[in-house]
Length: 432
Ligand code: 4AD
Ligand code: MG
Image (cartoon, rainbow, N blue to C red; front, top):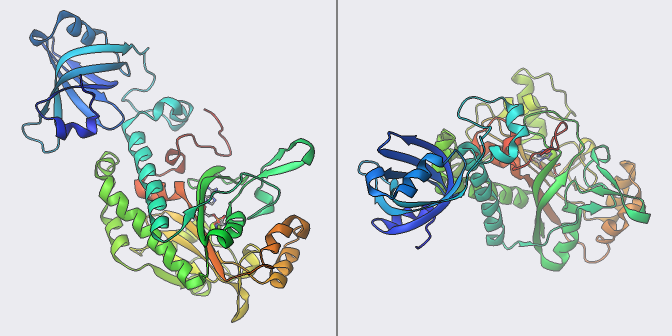
C-alpha cells in the first residue's frame, strides 16, 4: 500500500493509503473507535468501525496504548464540516510496538518532571510545534543569507582564544597542547573567510559559561554569525533588519498550524514585517530609560528590565547603536567621530523577546586593533592570526550574530528558552 505523510492528506482524498506513526489518544464506544495518530508531519483521526474490519484489527484497537507505534491502512476522507481537516476510514491496523505505560499524560506536570523527561516530552503537541518553528527559523536564516550573497563557511568549536569575554569560557583539556576553549562565537574565523568569499556565515552551537539563571540564557545555544566585506555600520544594521523581517515573514507564512497549537496571537508579528525598526543611539536609550524611571547610569550595560522598558510601547524591534567602547569587545571599530564610541548595535525584540542580535563594524586598522587587544588585557600572541588579517588587503567589514533560541522563543511566544532547543543545557541541567 502507498505510504502517505499526514500533511499530504489533502492530495489523497478517497484513496487507500498507509500511514505510519504513533497513537496519541484513543476513544472507543465498543462499536466504533477513534484513534488519534501522529506521524511527525501532522495529526489525523482514524475511525475504526468494528463491523467493517477484521477481528484482528479490532483486537489491535483494544491492545493499543498511548505512544504505541503502528501502521494504519485506510481511505482518506475530507471532514464534512471543517475545512482542511481529514480523517482516515480504517481498513486494517498493524501494530509495530506496544508502548509501556507512558509517564506523560494530559494532566499538568511540573517543569522539572517534564525537563527530566525531555526525551519523551518532545512528542507533546506544543513541543512538536516549537521544533517545527525552530526549523522554519533556521531555514529562513539560510535562505535570507543566500539571497544577500553570503555563503556558509562554518567555524571551529575548539578554539585557542576568547571571542567575547574571557570570564565566560568553557575550558577543555586538549592533549599535549594544553587547554582549548569551546567557541563563544565563530566571528573571528569568518572574518578571515570574507577575504576568500566576500560574504559568509557560520551556523552552529556556541558556549557561554555564564551563571545566568534566566528565561533567556542557555550555556549551549545556536548562533548564526554573518560577516561581510565592504559593509559598514549602517548597511550592517540594514542587513539585520532584513534578516529578522524575513524570518518573521517565513514563520507567518509557514507556521499557521503551529501558532494555533501554541495559542500564539500573531497580530504583533505582522507589524514587524511591515514597518521600519526603531533606532536609538545608546545615549538616546539611556535618556529615554531614565525618563521612564530606570536607575541606569550613562556607561552601564542594559539589564533585562531596561530592555523590556525600551520596547514596551514599541510595535517594532529596537536597535540600540553606538555603545561606549569601554563596555564592548576589542574587535569593534571605534567611531571616527567619537573615540569613546564603538560602531555597534544590539537588536531588542518586542513582546519581551530581549536581545536577539549583537553586531558591529570591525576594527580593520592593525595598530588600533592591537591597542584594543592590549587594553583588554588579552594575550596579543594568541590573536596574531587575527591581527594578521589587517596586514593583507584589509577592508572595512561588519557582521553580527543572531541567537537562534532567542528568535524561536520570540516567534513561539513561550516563556522559557529551555523549550526552544531540543535538549537544553543550562547552569543546572545537562541531562537528558
Ligand atoms: O551579543 P553576542 O555575545 O555577540 C557575539 O557573540 C558576536 N561575536 C556576534 C557577531 O558579531 N558575529 O551574542 C549574539 C547573540 C545575542 O544577541 C543573543 O541573541 C544570543 O547570541 N545569546 C544567547 N542566547 C542564549 N543564551 C545565551 N547565554 C546567549 N548569549 C548570547
Ligand atoms: Mg550581546
